[in-house]
Image 1 (spheres, rainbow, N blue to C red):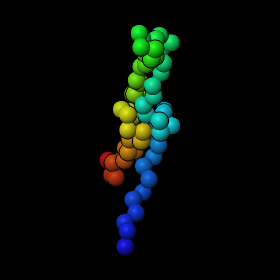
Image 2 (image 1 turned 30 degrees about the horizontal axis):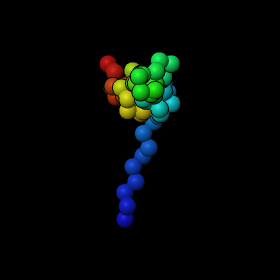
Image 3 (image 1 turned 45 degrees about the vertical axis):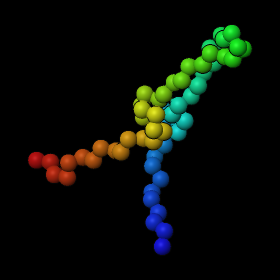
Image 4 (image 1 turned 30 degrees about the vertical axis):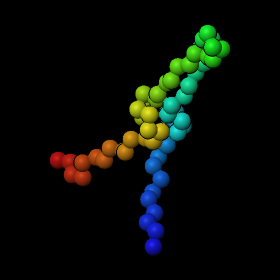
Length: 60
């Protein structure tokens, strides 16, 4: 019987797209474009939200 795992929550900052490539508009000698790779700082490139912090069960 297959095991099912619960889906991880998607990062609300990047919407699940943690790494994007942005073109700078500059071209290299061979004609290709210069790009920048940008990683979401909130999830460190995982695309998932961190686990919610659980409050202490007893307060006193």
